[in-house]
Length: 275
Image (cartoon, rainbow, N blue to C red):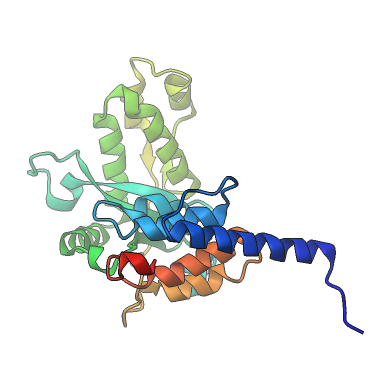
């Protein structure tokens, strides 16, 4: 006797088939479906990544972030802290010296991550195209690593103090995340001076923020997430990423894992009619 699939299973399979048909219609250049789904989102990303000015990295980074801790933890073999900090500012004066014309301007690291015990930290760069790895960027990440975590934190505090008041609230959010990682101590009264509106003396209060990075400093390592892994242990390829994402049994994870496998192939190298 043939087993009958549960109604919920049949419904999920029907939904997946519908998503696949919608994705195929979208890839064929037809109009958006009346009931777009997560499959539609990834079909758009996959199609538009082939366009000259489209930056996939900026649109897809939130999907990478959903699994980033899990993927990096599996790669380095250590549990990671729950706090991840995107777009970590790296003060140019810290990188190149205070003789730099604009020492309080910043470069960025895509993410700062830490082990659960905060005894090792990682600067991570996400690249959705192999060719977007830039020597200049690799160099300033190495300079940040050489300067060390204490100098990086000092740089964040200095940039916050030099920023206009309209950015101060956002810098307090950043300092709060750094505090959660045990890197700074923010005086409680500073929050009162910045929220709900910034008071005139708030910037002076930043001088009371304490850098808690001790001696010896925790190790700082650089990681890259990119389409193709390299022989170096600090690169995580999309195939490795997709394998972990695919372990989740939900529509978003399945769609993202499928997209990651497609994104290993360089953008722009296929005929438009084959998409």
